[in-house]
Image: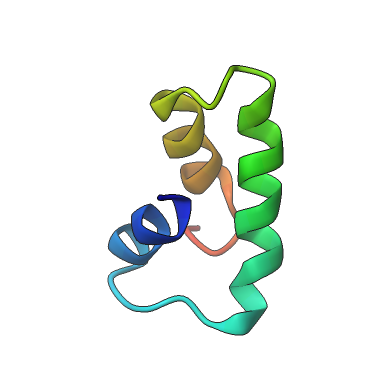
Length: 50
């Protein structure tokens, strides 16, 4: 799901070098039981989105 959200946020497909950022977003969201808002915030704060 995080990969699909990242694809939508970036306006294109994710590449192999985006995998580390996606894994980090999922790891960070674990502390909040993977709340949807945690995934969104992780994507917005990711360097790829800026």
